[in-house]
Image 1 (cartoon, rainbow over the protein chains, first blue to last red):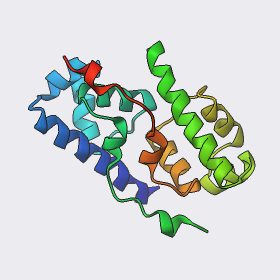
Image 2 (cartoon, rainbow over the protein chains, first blue to last red):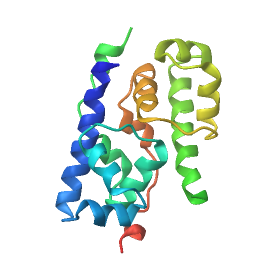
Image 3 (cartoon, rainbow over the protein chains, first blue to last red):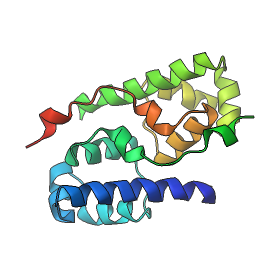
Length: 81
Length: 81
């Protein structure tokens, strides 16, 4: 489980990066996607897990495809048995 | 919210498609990714929301990048304000 924390952190970094690209504050993004602004802060730091629906809401607010928030290295080969 | 149900369904279809590609039963996939097999059945039908961690677990079991499970149409242009 601990190893997987890295993916949550990478996801959060992608949220932060995109929010900065759009020059949105926490509050502005929160308003756009109907989330609490403190939740967005925690998500960006990888400190909060998300539901599927929250991922969709964030993607809408950030005007990107949700799969772009999963833009991180994922070692598929290692996982094969 | 209702409109967003479609994304959960598309996600589920991608899980089903990939599980079939790997010729895995529900139980086999469940064992591979430490999930309950009835949960996988519901996810494939878009009847169950998922946590971020579950998405990662599914991707591991399905030996694909999690972003490939988000391979569906997402109308970004429409969402811009």
